[in-house]
Length: 139
Ligand SMILES: [Zn+2]
View 1 (cartoon, rainbow, N blue to C red):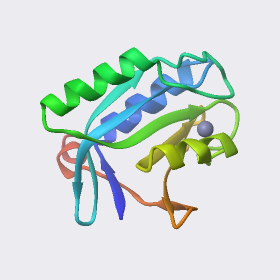
View 2 (spheres, protein in one colour):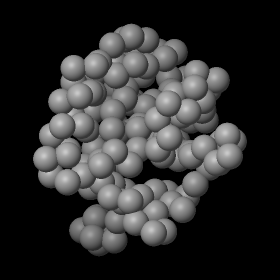
View 3 (tube, rainbow, N blue to C red):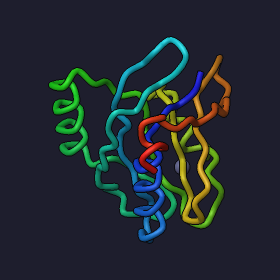
């Protein structure tokens, strides 16, 4: 299982994270295929906690984002957020979130590092991130 995302989409998330003093967050919408999760769209949602230590998606924006994605037949394949000043690995709080939202969790930090994680039998497993071929060609 892997996460497949356009390189420019990942770069956009990292760029936004680097510019932000608080954690940024949002959804990865796309399609679930046999060998991985294909991200078609990245959607930023405001962090209502406005905190460098934690995030919670603003509920109205969150519902709106999901509705709009469903209209285009896209599903939530992942949730992304950033860590400020610490590595992109799931915190205890993230683990609780992962149980509530059992999708891919993509975490970036403000140094450009990133990791994608899923829960497997209650345990966190890091999965590879691949880049969409089209986007790496126009590069
Ligand atoms: Zn986190």
